[in-house]
Length: 308
Length: 295
Image (tube, rainbow over all chains, first blue to last red; front, side, top):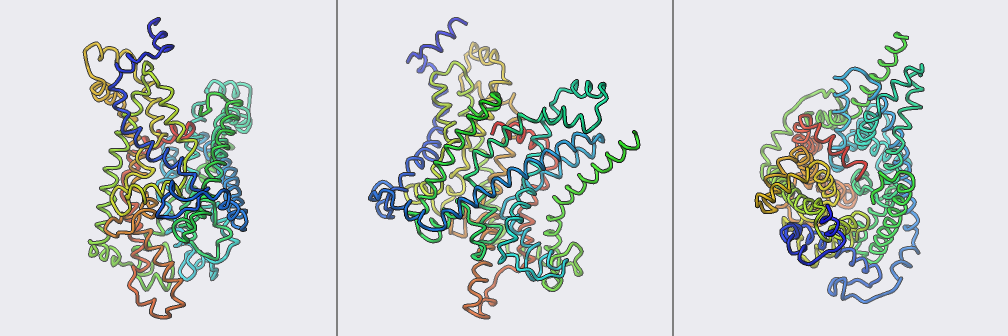
């Protein structure tokens, strides 16, 4: 024990050398992290450069804040920030409430086999890619042959009407993620000390009282953690949801352009690297600040669930 | 009281059955569309009860081995190689991190962890992979960017090793003169089977479902995976519908997979996942529960 404490306080080169095998194991992973993560972090400086393909990121000339002025001079900037934050906030609220309800219902159901079966089925949407989701959405929304128009006898042109899309996004997001979130909350619910329930029953608590006074307080740490983690990611959006599902329809631009969609289009389709890089930089920095803040709050509220 | 309870139970079952139907019926609509005769589909629209059944879609898919089977093969290849790498690298990285006696352990953890907090985003990542490393239109493009080692899986592995593997086992193996690699392979991994299965499933699913790397870095049709074929078909329809007004009726002449066939390809893209999933559901759940909160 004493030896261990000593080894911890003083890192000698001898002990580093003795562990060479362990370090060797980490080499592939370290190389990957450097290439895939750290070099692009440094590459963020491209947002302050007048990028041209020949010179590359490092060779291109500096241009100060030009890209940012350019970006924030357009209405796109406000639009994509509004969409990204707005959708995320609605997703967090609807997703959390819905998942908690499902988790509690699952817990209250007594029959063991149906309970199992329900759990299997609600995870299915989580398993498929957004591309497939966009095909399913098309089966419902296609103007000529779509299930909705055929059943209702309407001829709504879904892919050209902005007002429907906020709702469509919320529904699809809920559909795809509620199973996943419910499972997480359900795992917390079944972990709640059963003696608390027994005590509540002895005290004559009704089902609602038990849910309100035992289950929900038991879920509190998970709710806080999950929500704050989601808040830490509000500057990011699911590119597939906002780009693939509406099939990149130009008429839906105002309601489908999130930061990720904007960055992709600027870089790959419009060859507008400057503004794209500025938007990406903005996203990375705001995301970083928010993750740190969210974690600081988790740390205050519930230390065990903090990331660091 | 008992009566009251019965009603409550029934209501909850009805709610859950409704949710299960919400999850399943959209798939069924897609499956049904793939079995509907083309003209019926165009005339009657998508329906759960098609008037005229047809296997035409799947006959077409069987005949077009060149594109669709090739795509399927690519998906399988990428998934197998990718999953293997995405298992090996995190395990090799997580095991040393789980060893309390490793010097610079905290620094190395931080290097890993920081990637979860901050990232360069698409623009610099794309420029590096495309213009510096030139992985465009190579198989590396489907394997490497962002998918190969997720910090999150490493942390999952590390906490599993620290909590579930007794240190005394490692000490004992060391006294027997085993090398570190041997300890990892012969002592640690056999004890980590449930965790490994969970990881394989989650990582495998990521690779199977990935279309983004293909969209960013691949334009060569020979490298298309099944998800990319699906993705390209959406883009083609977009292109056609946009240019239809310009080119008039000519656009209609361009041969493109008809509606039923597109749905058929989507069906075969999700089929393996749906077939495997029910048997391994508990491992998926485990992965979600372990990863979800701490993720």
